Image (cartoon, rainbow, N blue to C red; front, side, top):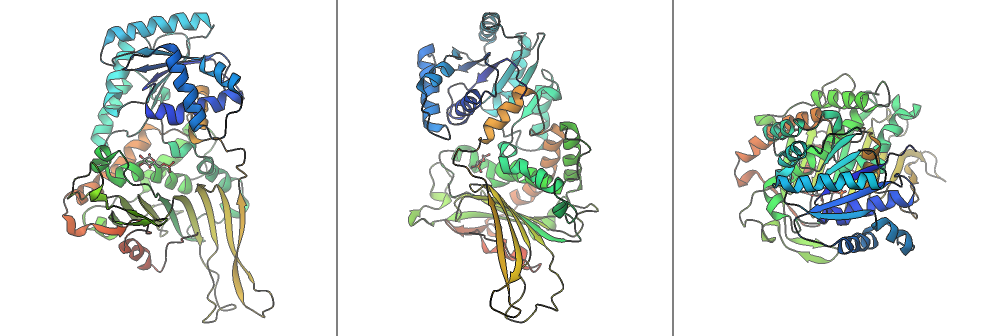
Length: 492
Ligand code: BG6
């Protein structure tokens, strides 16, 4: 693989994301030779830290969070020597000057051209200000490339996202902006395109003539954790649907791109988001369900209700669960419901896409006790990573009894597949924007979400559904499918 030397300027350099995801991801790339040996990371944070102290944090984080055990301390040590730390107040322009001086020295010392990856692992409130200051301080000039990597959430509605985008666009061009949606870095999410476009078997049937419905589930067992302050305002609709779920919808629904190039792929994803029917007013009540967990059990462990969680208002009507029926008004998908579902404190952690095909005529194999099961293509994204196909076959020893059988393919993850951040960081250093979200995608996703949010915000508690912690969600979510003769495939 092509490799570019670069310096990564990491805002939030000793924060949670850096420790849990970014250091381990960089380490994975380093040990596999996927990044140029001349790379350097400068961590920035408010607190003061010595260089050795910082490198120790890096080593410890890798030891704790890398996907497999690290058994080469020397290699880890030389990896950590690539890291330096500067304390910086993001509002103080002088600090940026010091950063600039440091960068220039470092770039000369290790003979790195001016290729800079600015990674903002900090509060979204600061994204605009930091990008502006980077430009004022002259940090975005040079003869190499500059790239800005930003974490979610990108705004809390269309207007705030637009404002944020305008702010960062004064310092960086769209081609320089890498908006992270970590679901796009997941191996099996990236595999959706391959499964579709590299297989006659599926691509020919990938439409409303053969598919009856599509189900996308992202369930979690964790609760709100220590993020109540953010989550109690955001809710599951903004936290999971606006980004991860809609991204998976676009990958499942998009037309084949003309080339495997980011622009061509973004164009097709944008077309899906444009065709997504926007629910308003009464339609929201018919098609979108919001739920909140009450107390319950997971794995025998008793758990509190959402309202009893620390930091949550005790009369909060915030949703911790969303399910919905989405329609894509284009030729390929007309009439095929896309059911989506996501929630905290559900029965298990699972991200899965299920494609349900229409049944064959049932005159041959139909009898009352033996109705045909549909063909299913199951794309397991997390924690299982693989594919499974459900087909019907003869029950051995019977004359005409049909049984569904599953053909399973599971990635062998003994070695540990690269984590989403590993793949995304690699792409960012190589300038491949395929698996990052384009502004147009963000904007259209918000335009779908905003009217739903508006209706929900105007409703009182009586329209909120409840589900027990450890369950598959509120019964209203099951009814949504039942109305159309379907049910959620809880696959086990
Ligand atoms: C994040 C959300 O984007 O995704 C979290 O903010 C959620 O609330 C997480 O828990 C889920 O990611 P994953 O990779 O564990 O499915």
